[in-house]
Length: 104
Image (cartoon, rainbow, N blue to C red; front, side):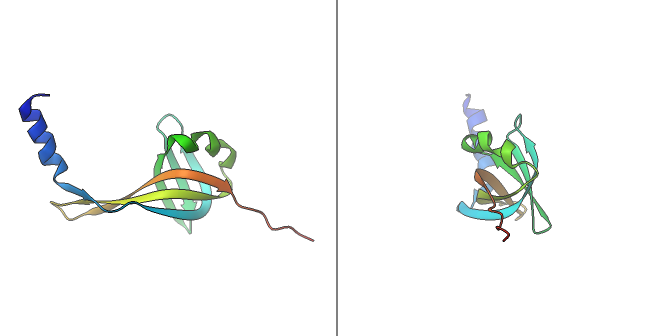
């Protein structure tokens, strides 16, 4: 790439900073999946959590669609240094069924 493009890209990247990525486990209902865009939507505690699917979890999500589940997510906060705005991004790394309590 030409030097000018590299310098412009570097300037744009320097406008953002990312915090540490932390793993979280969240119980909820998987209500949205796009395997074409590798995206998910999880409803948990009356909140909608949206994010990206890791390649390793893609084969597992269909069986959990519209069901209670526990999602393992990587949570990363990105801060725009110019505006001071912080956004949280999620990547689903694993998903598992919620064990239903046995009756009787």
